[in-house]
Amino acid sequence: MAVTRNEWFHARGALSRDGWESVVDGSIPGWQHTGIRVAALAGHSAGALSLPAGDVERIVVPLSGTFDVDHDGTTTALVGRASVFDGPTDVLYVGAGEGLTVRGRGRVAVAEAPTTERRASAYIAAQDVPVEVRGAGRDTRQVHNFGTPGALDAAALIVCEVITPGGNWSSHPAHKHDEHVAGHESRLEEIYYFEAAPARELAASGVVPMDADAFGSFATYSSAAGEIDTNALVRTGDIALVPYGYHGPAVAAPEYDLYYLNVMAGPDPERVWLVTDDPRQAWIRRRWTGLDTDPRLPYTSETLAQEGVRQ
Image 1 (cartoon, rainbow, N blue to C red):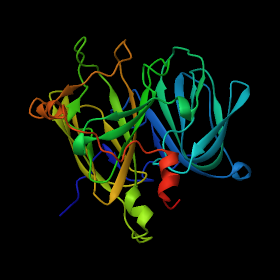
Image 2: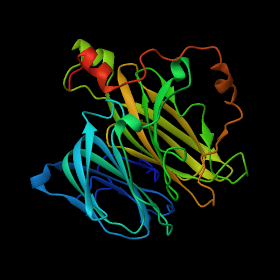
Image 3: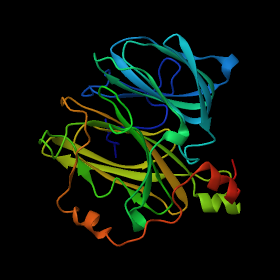
């Protein structure tokens, strides 16, 4: 039986271009407001990647490793982290009209949104990143809100990252943001960039084989704004696009932790993240009242060291 291609899901490397492992931009049919670039760099002396100035704002996010970013006539050092499961990282916002060059060793993502508005570039240190433990029970997840309206003065970009520990659910209940309803819902494209790894407590025990295939799952489904159907196992480097429709859940298998970087922007004049839950699932949010949050969170570099997790 022939396999039907899902235009909104892209496995690792399927969008490689110009030295980047993955590139999402306006060259994808039906995609307008957001972008992401992901790359693995081998070191300061082994090459760098540059992006030109133009009508696009960007946030540089170290996924693993340490990087220097040349921009605005200066260089900003991003200390980074061992992995995306090692707590928040330094990030750098570079406003529209400025180019940049990234140098370093590790994996790095650059979130993008086209805009003609100019904002000043901004460095956010890891210790200043707002960390939110959201949900309760098995719906508990950890959110790093470094690029949300309350933390960053950007023109269009809304960016955050989410850690879902093994066995938990996030992007749950399923929700959408594909129509403008003043005060209730905003129109936002959304990118999910995924990584997965052995669950922290299992990695610390040494029982996970080196060839373990870490994965989670992710789903989307249609709304009045358009038809979409993604039901995918997701692994490190995979990308799911959500132009419209309900999305969620993102589910971490009990043996594996799941991470995703969310990049959002849209055509509405106000930069705000407002969602509408699937009415059949909205009751789930109410159930969290009175439940405890998952005691495994938050994940930080300090707890990583205390637990002796393999790097």
